[in-house]
Length: 352
Image (cartoon, rainbow, N blue to C red; front, side):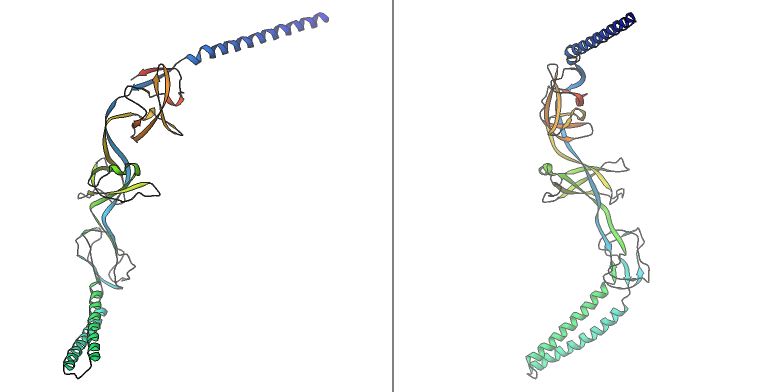
């Protein structure tokens, strides 16, 4: 019995020693591997040699297209619509009568006012003659003159109201859908239709304040709209005189020709605003840029190791970004694997 226990004890001791040996051996190999292997193994990356080039600095922006002129048509007087003289969705000329409000009552008031005006004119004439003969006082003559002037003003007022019963187009353009019919009683609050001049269109957009000094009135911009591959151009004609405090942007407006009627007010425009042309500019691929809390950084190859460089970047496109400072021509810029790199990490660069 004692022999059996002794054999079990020996087996346990042998197994324990073997396991301990394997653990110590593996740990030693791992430490050695970390010390001499992975740490010194360079990471294979791709890169490019930085070169300078001429850069046409275009700013990509979003803008909105607006009609050159646009109004809601109202009647200035209340009454029954006796005639509509335009077709919905058609072109009308400046000064064309669009609709007419019944003016029978106003004309009757005018006849009454004209009668009073004629009587006041005769009284004023007689008062002047009597004043010359000193048959009346100056005060009585002045009263007669004032009554005549008041009667004249009343007649002019009614004539003005009658003229307002014929509503005319203030400018040429396309009239929209009407909301009235002949016989409708309308008031000045009723919107009859919309009149839009789309022969020319306004493109309104905003730029960051740092580019404000680079924009001038008369510059030509390019823009595109959704659903069309055509590139249109417009001319900047107005610039807001101050920066918007809330957004730190400057609002700009350009005008474009739309004689073919292919552009519609209310749509969005993708605007390309040309800024200054930069010579000896450094433009790098966007994927080489690493955003950090303090700005942007890149990695360059320096004696077999990655070197971290902070850069000042400006205009960005879908594929590249303009570097203002931090890089120089001749630097080998790392363009792949930059998110996992660290400063002074060993690298092996494949230059494209």
